[in-house]
Amino acid sequence: MTPSAADSPAELIISACTVLVHDDQERIGFREDAAIVVRDGIVEAVTGTEAAAGLPAAERVDARGQVALPGLINCHTHAPMVALRGLAEDLPTEAWFNDVVWPVESNLTDRDVELGARLACAEMIRAGVTCFADHYFAMDAVADVVAECGMRALLGQAFFSSQGPEGRERSLDFALRRRGSAGGRVTTALAPHAPYTVDDTDLAATAGLAREHGLPVHLHAAENRAQTEASLARHGVTPIEVLHRTGVLDTDLLLAHGTGIIDRDLPLLERAGGRTAVACAPRGYLEFAWPDTTPVRALRGVGVDVGLATDGAASNNSLDVWESMALTSLVQKSAEGDPRWLTSRQALHHATLQSARAVGLGEEVGAIAPGRRADIVLVDLTGPHTRPVHDLAATLVHSARSADVRTTIVDGRILMRDRELLSIDVPRVVQELEERLPALVDRGHGRRIQEYDT
Image (cartoon, rainbow, N blue to C red):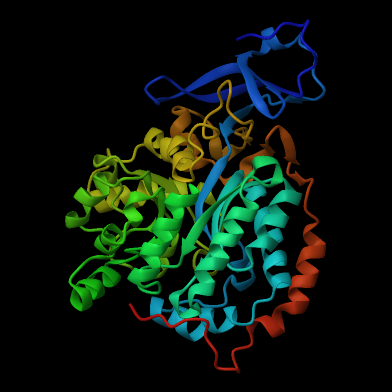
């Protein structure tokens, strides 16, 4: 539909930009000299700049020389872990968990989580991320930050079986209390940590609760090949087979990493009773020297969406989904031995519609189209590192950087304009967080919140 000048003023009109669009087969395309009309937080129309020039609007953004993309989605992270960025470097996975991360996390207070979440949201907004899926502790603090700063998030209160039934009950309580909050921008999930820290009884109970209350499940599984081999040696089944026998595969499931998914798992994933998606965070896999990566091609072959992610900044050092997009494309080419696999357009499809479906928002975000929420980022392609442009998709994936994002918009609200953050006071957050770091990083107590033993 094309609005008429007689309509009441639009909330926002973005004009003179190139818009990433999807056709009815979900193929990526670009519309030049376009305008986006936003009303009540929803994209009302994508039209021509000239057609929109006479329309009344409360606010206008001239995006000349910029590309409008659907806001990026970080499909699996632990946002408050930015407080641990760089603390546990050059370590194998077991030492990373047992010697550093889980001892430090035993010190966490709600205030630490809040400050970490604020800093993480600031980083993501500046990198063009409008939505993230988080799996951590003290999630009421994270939900409050999301509500205040204007982002969108799928949040889950993590739990281990070592916490007893109370851990699972807290996860359910959080999910029921906070879903639909922040004007609908917060959705929630049940969040068992992983099959190696949550036993079959708790996993089966979680699956039952998810079906009863209409909640998705967000957990780590088959994170790496060593976990799969350990599960086979100890129990005779893969982590994916554990999820199948406990009923978790019959829920709407967001599975983190999956680099240990093997061929025998694929038929189970294909027949899963719920919506199943996998979040791929390639930088962390490289840092831990895992021999495999998320088998994107095989997963797509059985109908599983693969969204882009960063994991927490303690393992990834960054919450830059733009980097994850480029690395996913490059690592997949290497893993498959095929330079034609994961083209730039395929990478953009994973970054947009597949990521939206992975977090359960496939009908709301992930595309700039009438009826979708106005989660939009504007990317400046006038810098020398992005010129000339022979293939716009390739330029976006492999030449542009998150620092080229000029403006970030969620639900029609501008959260960053011309690189200026409008909803988070970063210097204040950094000052208080750094004052709290000595108590947070102390490991002299010898406690761990959990043991890494797959």
